[in-house]
Length: 434
Image (cartoon, rainbow, N blue to C red):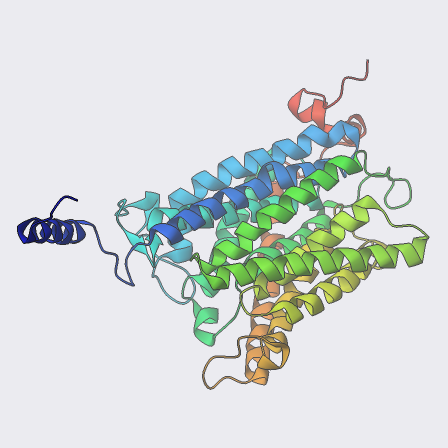
């Protein structure tokens, strides 16, 4: 057996100590490799929700002559919003600024190096993660106007809407604005994403007017299988949407993913059962829509509730969003074509309010901030909902009027609507019918 001298042992220990000192040590407030890797993954998952998830989900619900137009709208919005976010969106949403809007310190990501941190992740990763939220939110509104809105008007609307609706609300809630100071709870976008998009979709659909033959002569979804595939992609991608909003690879992210899945599952089953009782048989499109309702409703609460709260939220989402679909189309007579308000608007608002109750330890939630009661939190959530709904409705109305003036009207002609926007707007056809 080889003998090891004391001198050799001392030399080895010295080498290990030198290596230990040469490896960067990350303090609690430094950049974490694990957190960074998770948020980069979550960023990809959230982009996956829009492309191809949302594009396929919406494309399957429209007539076959409009399938490519809906996909093109999602793709174009993704590109435009990404550019706009790096130019002005991020800095106005997350710049220090004041209570209402951020400053211009991060225009074009100025001053943001590869080592600049935002919490435990690089700031450029945080910017990219938030960029995917800025992409999907205006893309959700596509469901309000398919088959009848001019492509040029859609692009101008999306640009203005992101800057005057999404960015201010994002700053109020997540960027240190006045709602954040009040103690608002919106973990992943019940207000910032779903309430803004849902309310704006309702206003836009009302101003745009219904499709030809609404509501009795409309054709059913041309490809439910495509819609189901899109819903499945959204379901998976939502793990990054909600789990990534923890901004860390820890138990909080794990719980957010767990409750997200539970809410989606419960809402879809409740939706299916209601359809079964009401119509005699459940539909694939209905189940997929129930999934999205459950996902949208758990979004604001996913960081503040446990499994019990998730089951309650899912059940409430499946029932309330189902009946909201009929209310919008039949009672209000508004052709919110793919149910953006009934699913995302109603769901986002419902989840924002329910979390004030379900975060209580009574429901195995984490509890409230020091000195805050359930009643206090509920009042804060109501203030946030009212402010967001009013802001989104009023500013969307103004934006639509501006866009109409700039583009000579936002609606396509009746002949173009009959022919379908795939050929009219893009010179392409989704299917070879010959």
